[in-house]
Length: 424
Image (cartoon, rainbow, N blue to C red):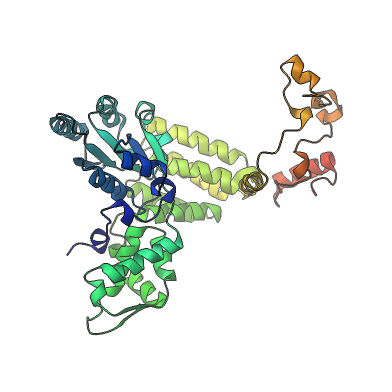
């Protein structure tokens, strides 16, 4: 019997759940599909939100030959053979075949290079799927020939809708008397991954008898998941759970746990560049201004890992992990940019104060651009009090120093400069 996720995989665009910003009526991919003229593109988003499904739907909707390769199992030879097969399918005015590459971020440079000619000449329309930022993992020449579409995590309502649809429509589940008392545990363990969600639903319903009602409670889901952890995670995405444990151990200042999860990733064959990038983010998001050297350490580690590779890269990552985990913690920079972005979204494009504007022309000077600006270096202590924010948001404190030695020093300096303006 096919897994529930496969049985419930939508075949048409109007059955597809989520990504309204891409495939909703009037959205960019919706219009491209309806026109029959789609570009090569890369779908970037977390696992289990429908990247593969969307690629298959597009091929079905456009009635194009569909070839698929997995970056894990395919080499340059496989790419060339698939491209040659695609060439043989092009005749008369038939549209070019679609080549779908799952986990394209795992393709080597030579594998990606082997795609360039076929994409550029229109032999194939490439659809790549990745959970990693394409800017880091896809070569510039290929990236420049593809659009990048960002897929968003499915909402709670969308995930619940998937469960309810499976209970209504799946040939096996609809024959059973299933009552869902709570969705919380299923949603929590699936982590927003629809494939995992279906795996969990299948797991907790398969032990019931057709003649008996099945009650799905949070307790029942938790019990089955804990007893069958390998099974529900059979899609091979446990690495997202482990990287989460790694980051949370760093944030929690436990170098022992952090280096343990690091070892789990290395022994599991994780890409060391993936680990190093997460370390970079943690160094800024969780340590930040409490110890700015953590970002320098993480940056150096990232560069060093790229230079030496495994097995020595494990030592570099261990050093950087222990240092970052043992550093004092602060998320003040992370919170500051979050609050600043929220303020921008709320207040819109406020005008730049005249005295802060650039004045490269005489007309701009006559319009008072740059007038009354105080050049800080002309004043004692290289500081001159003046307004740097738009009038509408003057005095808004977006950065709040936290309780650590480095930021307490910052707080005192800011208080000396700005007095009570920002409440420091």
